[in-house]
Length: 105
Ligand SMILES: [Zn+2]
Ligand SMILES: [Zn+2]
Image 1 (spheres, rainbow, N blue to C red):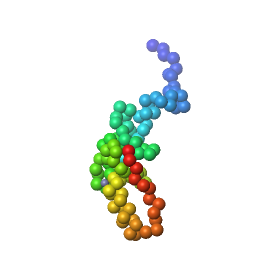
Image 2: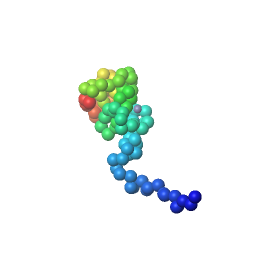
Image 3: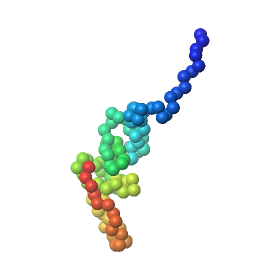
Image 4: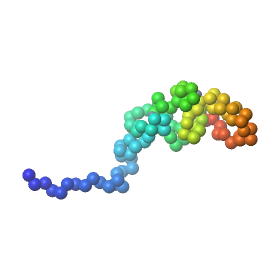
């Protein structure tokens, strides 16, 4: 059977910006896996996380809505670990007081 020339895949520019393909390209800030549109996510500033990946990098406690947290160099810290770290830092370098304040989800 004769077939016409194969269709070329559409160039990327033609993919509508809100297509599922683009939504799948959202990467979790914790595990760096793609996040499906149907999955629950948590947002912290410009990053999104799987619900299960949204946890403190020190005590590994999963952070809940309403918890205070700090996003520091891409790592999540719960408020108490952040304050512990800040105390340590202030002992090491008391002049550096530019650390961000905790925020709530
Ligand atoms: Zn994840
Ligand atoms: Zn913690």
